[in-house]
Image (cartoon, rainbow, N blue to C red; front, side, top):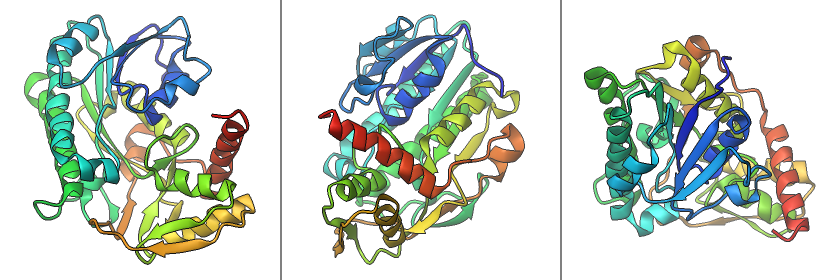
Length: 323
């Protein structure tokens, strides 16, 4: 994989889970500018949070002028900023739509005005495939649920971002790339991730709550594998103008099976409980990642047990340090 070096990289949402992990792979050889509202701050716990090559600007992607100023001089743009998480989206669907659509439009417009922009990578979501998605490819039809259900407001906003990113490339020549993460987890995750919550409860031997009957099926992708795909998307010449499913087809489990795996791997005494869910859910979501493999050479490497183990080690250490 070609390495990025001697670039000025502008990352919206860079204090978030995936963005802050990406920075760890880039900060030694590049100048990094993070633009983030710091609502969820994974960066504060990273060993490189005070690195000389890293600058953090507190800002909102809805502030077009703020983005236009902060992005100046960038060679590479990574747009991670978004409203995400089912509980957050359900409470604030209007803000979700505004940030994910209008905020993305602001970032793309600012990137299009840069004199030396080499790549723009936007984060979409596997939610664009709707409630049932088995081995979906990038050519598969996207699908969202009924109007009025907040979960699909998130999916619609991210789908609009995808269309904008690709059309900015086709109409205006912006070298844009889209990635669709499928259930990413790992050290440093903040917010509402199911696997993180399972691990935190298992470490404390507390009950693990599963919404519904636990039969929902997901493919789980370790964050380092996700970052590998992002780096390939930022450097591979064949990535421009394309969307990529990013996930691990070999790390598939039902929600109940995932909870069982966490308890088993950690040797936890946590009981597993079933609780009702009052919002829309997704029953099946497993990607085809053939395009990611064949076009830009990225294949997920970390299996589910190993990923759970690494993630638990991180949170166990954080608990011991009083984080």
